[in-house]
Length: 390
Ligand SMILES: *Cc1c(COP(=O)(O)O)cnc(C)c1O
Image (cartoon, rainbow, N blue to C red):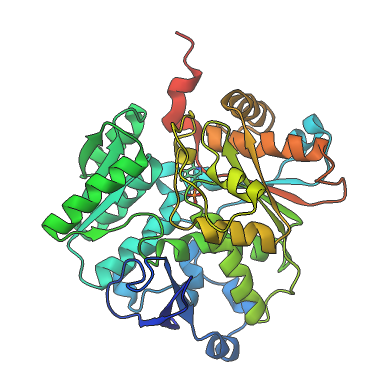
C-alpha cells in the first residue's frame, strides 16, 4: 500500500533507511522527512481513483508511511469538510471565505491526523511505550491511538493547561505528568524519561511521521477544490507541522501531476504573547529565537521554540506569505463571531485565523478576488473555561 522509499534530512539532505525507528537527523539534529516513489504512484493510479477510497485520511495510504494495513490505527480521522462560510463572509464583507473544520476529528482537533499516522507507524515498527510533551491536544490524540494499539503512553503537560486536556489523557489510559513550566520544559522532562526507560519520543517533528498525517490536509484541500488550491491559507502556528506538511503535500501533488505549480500564500498567525515565528519572519533570520515568558489562552500556540522553525520560515518565504500576531482578546472575539455566524464552537487558535484575516484584509494584503481558507484546528470544547463568566 505505501510507496515510502527512504527518509531525508530537511536540513543536511542525508538519506536514511525507512524501516527502522528514527528521531532527529543523527548528523545535524534537524527533522527527517519521508520520501516516496512518486513516479511509480504516478504510473499505477490516478487522482480520480482516490474519489472511491474510504472517507478518512487513509484514502491517501500510498503516500503515507504504514506498509501493512494491519497496523493502521484509525478512528475516522481526516476528510473533514471544507465549509463555504457565507454568513461569516457577509459579516466581514468578503465573498470567498472557507473554513476547513478540523474540529470534527477524533479527540476534536487536527492533532488526530498526525498522531494516527505516527502511532500507527511506531506500532508497525514494534514500539511498546511512547512519550509526548504537549500543550494539550497532541497528548489527547496520542493517547487515543496508543489505546487502540495497546501501546503505553506517557504524557508531559504544563500544569496550568485546562483540566479538559488532562482528563482526556487520563480517560484514554495515558500516564500524565504535570510540569511546572511551558511545553519546552515538558520536552526536557520527557526527554530524560525517554532515555531512562527507553520510550519512543513522539515530540513535534522529532519523529518523521506526524507531519505525514498532517500533510493530508493539503491533499484534501486540493481534492475538495477540484485539484486546485486557494489563494491564501491562514494557519495558527505552534510547532508548524500542518503548515510544513501541507507545503510538502503541494510539492508531492505537483510531482504526481495532480496540481499545477500555483501555490497559496501561506500565513502563520501567532499570539502576541508568544510570536517567535512572526519576529523571525520580520527580522528575516533563518531560525527563530526562543520566546521569553510565553503567554496566551491558545494552548496550541504557546510554543516558545519550534524544532522546525527554519522549515516554517522557508514556507512563508517561498509562498510569498506572511506572519502576523493577534491578541487573545481578538482571538476570542473572532471565535464568537465564527460561533454565531457559522455554528462552530471554535477554539481560540481558530479565532486567531479570523483575527489575522481581518488585519490582512484591512492592510490590503488580502484582496477581494482572493479565495481564503481558515483552519478550525480544534473545537472550543476543551477550552470552555474561557467562556465561563463566573
Ligand atoms: C497544536 C495546535 C495548533 C498548532 O499546530 P502546529 O501544527 O503545531 O503548528 C493550532 N491549533 C490547535 C487547536 C492545536 O491543538
